[in-house]
Length: 205
Image (tube, rainbow, N blue to C red):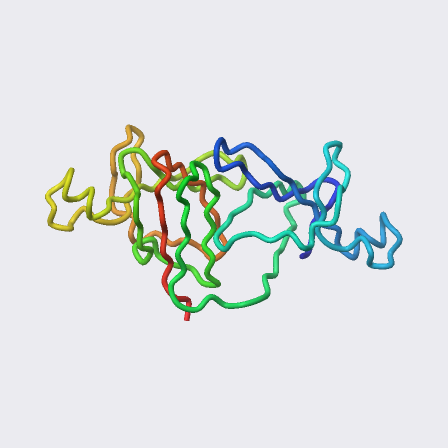
């Protein structure tokens, strides 16, 4: 982790019920340890952010599911993450059953086209994946998905409608989004009112 200012910046976990912040994490870098703490390395690492903006308890052992996203608040705009660990082999299924507003991250170490992600339980007319602005956190792009079941029910049933689509202003699909790129590590905000969505990412290998 580089460039994180523990006293001003956070990673926020959002509620999958209402998208409010339910937990915030800060990070103390070695530079901040030297500047504001004892400089012996004991403060370096992740911490739960307290109510008054103070570091709470150590969070280095907190675990998160593959594909979980976070909302960053990086006022200094200098943050860099380095991920380490196991490379996912084979397809990776992310099950969001029962969740309304998950922040969904691309769990692969590579970019992937939306058209290469398999989808179950998505209701194109009611549900979206939203790209949030990194300046304001407002929605700048929304995608919907037409499953084979929805194609049979609401379209011609010939498979032509199956896939990702840009969601128009009036809730209408507005052009294919199958070639849109989902960057490695990027998160989108899901709006899954039916609570039955599953996404399967292809193998990164």
